[in-house]
Each structure stands twice: as C-alpha cells, then as structure tokens.
Image 1 (spheres, rainbow, N blue to C red):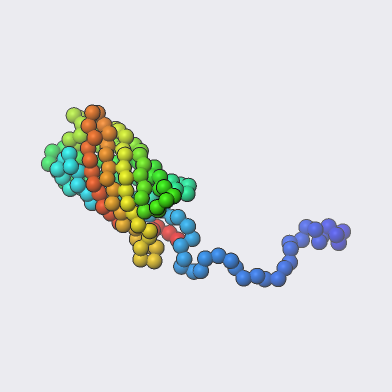
Image 2: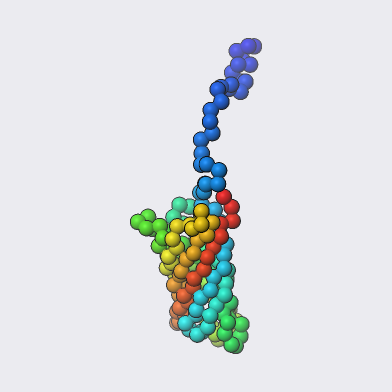
Length: 160
C-alpha cells in the first residue's frame, strides 16, 4: 500500500526558478487592430479604414480589413479577408491574397466579389512592441478590372 501511495502521489521536488520571458516582454505573436488611410486610384478618392492582424502559423497571418472611400456617388466601400505570407529572408516584407468585396463605382450595381492581391512592408514592432506601422499596395481583381489602392496604417497589439 505504501508503494501505491508513493507511485500515485505528486512528485515533491526542490523549488526551481521559473524559466521564461521577463515581465513585460513579448511572449509571441498576438492579434493587432488599427486604423489606416489610403488612396484609391480608380476612384480618385481617399479612404479611411480599419485593419487587423491575427497570427495563424509561423509566417502566416490573417488580415481582415474594411475601407470606406470618400468619393461622390454610391457609398464606395471594400472589405477584405486575406492571408499574408511573410518570407523568411526579411521579416518586414509580406504579401498574399484573399477575398475582397467592393461596392460603389467598381461594379455596375451592388457588391462585387474578387481576388484581393497585395504586397506590404511592416517593420518590427515599435515602442516596446506595442505599435506596428505598415504600408500596402492592393489590387482587387474583379470583372475585367483591377483597381489599385495604396494604404498606410498603424496597428496596436491587443494582448501580451
């Protein structure tokens, strides 16, 4: 019976110091959210929007975004859900593709869906790992056209 108790009892050992990052250090990729502005060359209009970053796997990030264009006519907007791939040779460069839905002057009526393709540049996190500025060049490949949109923004980390 004593042998059974010893085998089933929790292991008792000498306390060892915790191993891990110091308090306040970045522990790994976390979601980000931020504001951005840009210029839609086909609409000849500025845009305001929001964008996020959700890490999926090392080198792969989900990028949801929504932009409203300050143009005349039917309220032009675009929402996108993209996957970014970051090459290993330089962490600041990324690119990818996803689904884009646009409304406004891009289509004849209603919303149009197409392939959203982009390349971007984002330096490592700034201000002790809190802010990430970025610039992106985006094309929405829809119905025999490919509107070009240049954006710049800054995301904030949502956790540690």
